[in-house]
Length: 360
Image (cartoon, rainbow, N blue to C red; front, side, top):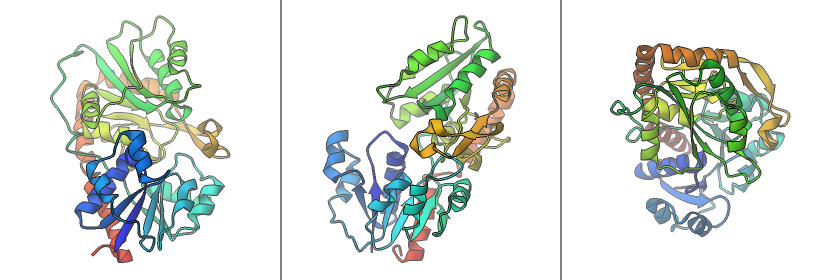
């Protein structure tokens, strides 16, 4: 039997990156998986992105069997694209409830997958009545792994944050806390790797407004596409990863940093609670939940976390003052991250396919 995996495979998104890992992993296990581009014909993605992974392209030459089970791996309002004999919707969200349209489309599936137990609880509480299974994501441990100690900026504590521009990522909380925690002369630096493709947004202008002189130093990597190897090098150049996010479906950059033995300060709510704890990092407490209207159309009527800004100030200072502790937590983070491999994630899918009779 075959499986159709309906998603994207070449864009710079979490869905595309994890789709490649799932499809290639299932293919290696002998599942006849057919990658199908969600937002048009397969050739559309090839043209727009300049090609796809060669094995994905090879698998796309097979015919699409509509009598095969199909996974739609995308935001939940895309589940209606599922035309399989057995329909599986696989998604995640960063709020305390799903939009009603997501719930309606999820209840048209035969079953629904999401990466965390936290997410499964949100799905059920939102009204998803179909069977819900936890299928985790993973990290490439061959690429994201501890490295040699850095030889530059050894006189400073380097904080790193990686995110797509938007209110959900808590960049405003981060910059205010960083400026409150340190003086311009303190031996620290905050490196921001930001992606922003929305033409109406002006991140540099907004960042500058929150960093009047004198402020502690900030380095900005803006709309710079880095491959996985260079991202791993960037993580390893830091002493601590920091992301006061208001909500995550999973939190891939946090896990990637942990896999590189870099401890993380990240919000103690939503997806990252799956792998971040006080032994391997610095969970940031929240003050409560707040309306998520700034999260776009999906956030209307929902809530997300409001990270504790004062606690973030304290944690930033604590990390600087306790270098041995952060190194110890980093080693524990790398060890814990080694359990969240793509092999483990693909195994979870494979077990579900076995139960459905798709895999032997």
